Amino acid sequence: TDHHWTALGAYYAYVQFCTAKGITPHNLSDYEVSQFPGFLGSFYNDGGKPDAMKNDPDTVNAYHPVSATASMKYGDNENSTLTGGQVIFDESTASASLKYGTFIMGDNPFTVIENPEVSNGES
Image (cartoon, rainbow, N blue to C red; front, side, top):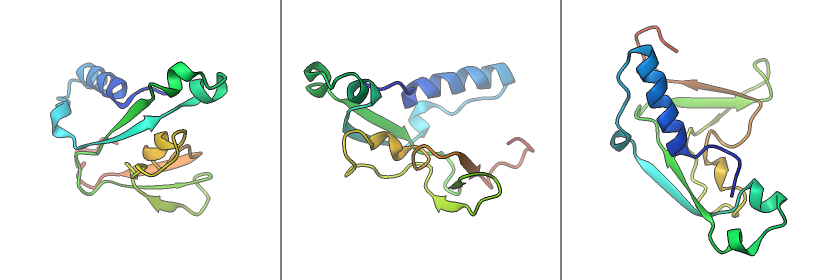
């Protein structure tokens, strides 16, 4: 019911990226997953709210970073005061149209994710 990629689709793209870079991707089973059922996305909301979609809402699956120390900050731009947040935010009580906000605290103009466990010079 939405125009965004699913997290599973993003994972498949990540695997292809890793293959192209010659690095070993994490297995999907390495990730803790949170599920947020009852999501009705932009196709539903902007498309006249059809009953067929309303009666069969999506479940947003969110895969948590493997790193226990990854953190994020977000704001309006790189020069603004940044607010700390969670890479995967609990949206279980959010309304049906807002559950996609689980990823990096929603749509933000500027986001920085830091992972101190990366020590090979990659970013």
